[in-house]
Image (cartoon, rainbow, N blue to C red; front, side, top):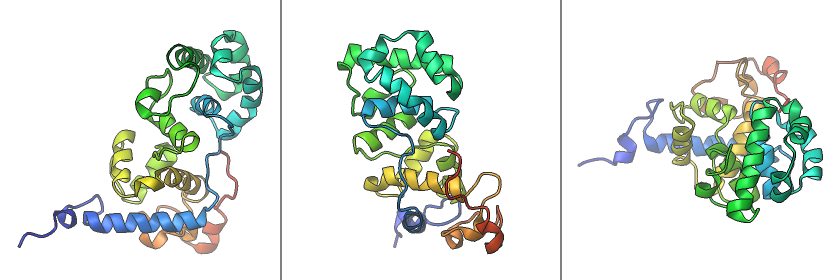
Length: 244
């Protein structure tokens, strides 16, 4: 008798697909309990503000973006206003976020595209969002999940690192990671999953020295031991409000 194919397929850790799915979902549940307040750490009040803030967040911290967006949005509260902005004014406001000339170029083109094709409104579909200048799947999923309530997995450096450490996937390409993890976790949880893993990556599962001994999913993690395993020493590595 032929067995269930889903149980026979091997994963990066040698588990069956079914075992991996069960382990991944249990890990997510435990991490969600650890970080019940996990959320998008970019400040915004409208889809337009989140879209702009996410574009600005490339190669910088959320904290830095949150410092410059109040003035940016005061001057340019919507796509129509930003589309008519003077380049030098925008560059001056966002200079501290880094790569400000390229970001200004993207923002001005993005605003113009919104005005020309969407009457100044941010579209609520992945297909439309990725046509905007400076917007890829990562940015689109941030906007969809947090501004429109459409489930999406946001693959940033923290998420990708943890997904591989957890043995959920061996893929390096963000799109392949997104699809691999999406097959493990129910779609309705995708947006919150993204927040939870980013919180864990910033606070406990650090890139250089993970706090393994203070991790709530240590017993389920195949990478246990990549960081400090002593509980007391590991606890000192955990950050309550790390740089973002």
